[in-house]
Length: 262
Image: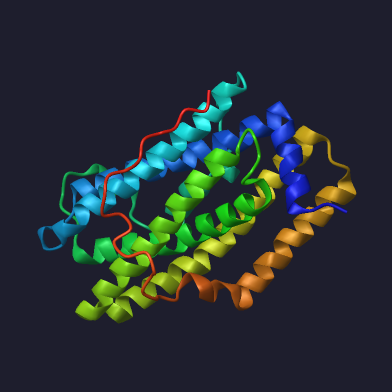
């Protein structure tokens, strides 16, 4: 049988699969950095206090993208094109989740509803990111090649998730509770579908690169669909609840610098 640890070890050990993994991660993080940078620049006057935190969020995402690029360079690899069906951030935007890039490219201030939409989107996607990094840290936090990167990114994702909880609760107390819950539910329902589809696409590409037998690929696909079934029934609830985090004002300071991995 195979486990999450053995699967990731296969991916890390093979240059082609590792290249695809790091490229997908770097692309998604860079996209998140751009989105947060634009949102900070367009923050409405009533919520200008959020701009430094959104800027910090974007700087962290940019840093994560550079970390994955550095991991590629350390092995003498260059980024590869991300398959369209494996582009999580692009597929979320196409589904209408979060703020449209056309809106972010315009130099028009956002509204408070836009900021709520952004924070609800971030609450859901940062939950996904934090969960994934916790899993990777459990299995590979001490790995000599990727362990340092995983530990740093996991810490940042936990900060991002705490920030989303804190700011959404602040806005809920200001009278936006129903709007926030509606946005969270819409985003979570869409995200679990896209995550399933992206997971299936990534595993399909990895299976072809690593020449997995059909029975192994079929078992992995069945596992992904089973997880989606669980999330559709009950698992989505973890993405929409709000509670005051133990880490208060987690994005109140400057972003940390990108470490050296070479």
